[in-house]
Image (cartoon, rainbow, N blue to C red; front, side, top):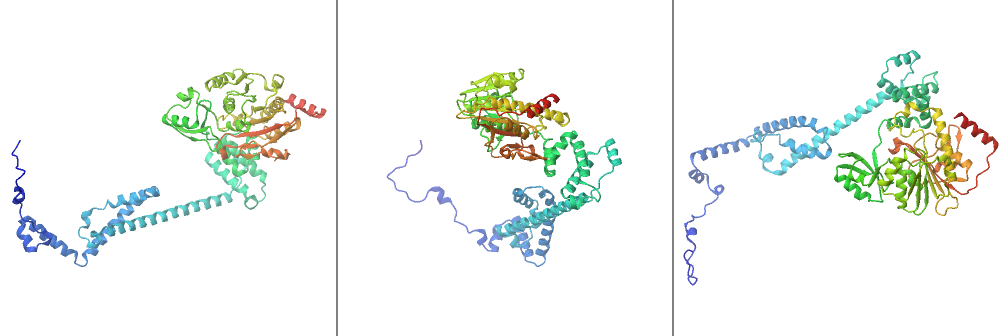
Length: 554
């Protein structure tokens, strides 16, 4: 336990350990030189003498200048070495690279530099700032030189374009035997440059028709289109947009999915997919249910959320017709060409499984995928049938709204189906347009003009051809008591009121066109009609004969 101290006894002074401590000594730097040398051993005295000689050497003139010059030379070499690495670095990483470059200078090289450069941190910071300014200036100069080089290259290309000479027939025949695509592409760009400023850059005695025929030939060869489609695209787009459209058709559109609001919310679905390794974003401000998928570590069409019906793979452009239709709850709605069910299930989700939704498709085999999607997404208000849409008004009518996503030539989805490039001609376009005219008249006849909430028809195609879009709407305006109304879509190009000598109703500017190169989605056309009378206008005999002749030729 140890010895116990008497609490009554008083202390007589400091403890035993305190009494054994020696008297405090003065710091070494306050002692004289003789006192320090007496207390140091032989080795320590030699080190002290060496340090004293070095301090004297610092104060000698010329030595500091030599060392500072050596340091400058070393820094210049270090900067030259680092500039190559700093060229490709971002501006945010510039400070970090400069700090790392300072660590490359060995401290032993500058032991004898003057006291101003080695004593304070302010001088080091000033040196660092000078290094930063020097390097940034050099980088700015390099960027300026690169911009100058790019300008020179652009000017040289412009001079080459201005000196463009049309090839002869023999030269073109020789190209057919051994085609050089890079040379053809350069000739396309030169030709477009000349055509944009034709009066000043054209060759004497040559006409615009010659340049255009060469351009269409080169474009057809380079992008693998047939002559008919290339001529249609040249007539449809300005030359500045034509190349952008053709290039956009060579790139796949991004994968998009639509949230099924009958089972989940977009926020919850996005969080669940992100947790599974899917990189996604909202498709845009115009949609509250669309998501665009950039990449995924799991198959996007085989996740548990997909199997549970929380979403469906659907193109961004196919959301637009349903948004224009704007179905309301407890209405009677018809989807005339419904398979595979993306638009049908979207309509049902907007109706919140109320009312009656009739999904029709002429192909019985395609209705299998329609039934599967309807069951998987939890749609309960849908009737599925497979009648001919051209005669559907004789089967059922009195609908509040009708969606007609008509079969078409597919010139807006060339990125998905490259066979369209060579597989479509004038007869195919006319055949599709004739079928679309029959379908839209049947869709209008299915509408009840006295509907208190509806009376709307939305017509859409995945084609950009005028004959399949504005031509069909113009035909419907002349055959039924309908008018074109606003689609409610706040983006997209206006429909044509005039095209290649054809004049359409002025209200067709309310229709909307969507292109791959401007909206990053499939080419699409959307028009919304309002039926104001159930009476059918009287058709003259001449019009009847024309339609009969057209149907026989097709």
